[in-house]
Length: 382
Image (cartoon, rainbow, N blue to C red; front, side):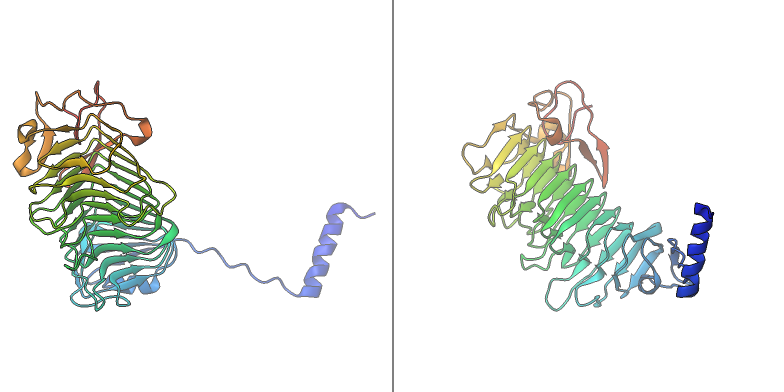
């Protein structure tokens, strides 16, 4: 009698005889690290884009790479500047007529990269054109592009931006912006400095969910439009930001919600513990489309203008104060001073809608402390 084990051996031998030798199983490729820089085998980032695979890390030596553009198709890629930022200066060139970097792969991380000068014939050039699903950007700079970052529409894409700078992007036509996020699943921005968009918006997002917490957003002396534009609505939290509308802004609104129609499933917006500064002679701090489910709490208003243009919006503990409430209002330092009327004046906010981060200039973030009753505005007095 054959045992079960011997039968299995016979069966295996029979299959090998009938089917011939088994095909070898290809070894799974391990992620690799590629080093890029002058004097290296890969002298420029575009050379790495041609050889890197999924899950790889590309380490780019600090320095300026003039006219080097690339399309990245790999998934799970990490692109990182080492020993400082790696600066990609467009110098009139673009990948696919779209951007300095076109990122077509999913799950990309960009760290310590500087992209500048993107301009293309259709006037929609970007430092990064994001076409894949999922992008995380940290410690990076985007400046003097037609768009800093421009993303396509992707319902499973999450965009995360932390500790970065966007300044003087925009083509001067009102259609290009410091940051322009299309119809993605979510946008999260923390610890980031937006400054001086050219006619366009500082931040524009069509995402289904927006979390904009602990940033500095300022027009400086430029002709920027909205500071934050969420034109299609969406489940959104705008909290703990310092938002400064400059005297030359072409639009009197700082935060706009639903201006192009509330097309997203959620119409819920919480605007909490921001310090809003209006340096125009008039304005509206938060403009809301009819039907918005908004809550406005614990915001400080500096300068003229109405808190909102929509009647009946729940609003608690929003207060107008003068420059003496802050360390150096003229120098954009809106931390509170002892004796400020903003101290211990806040109303309760549900945990999920609180300002959990504070902006630290330039481009850092720290946890907002909880000390007794919450203070008004973007900073808790220490």
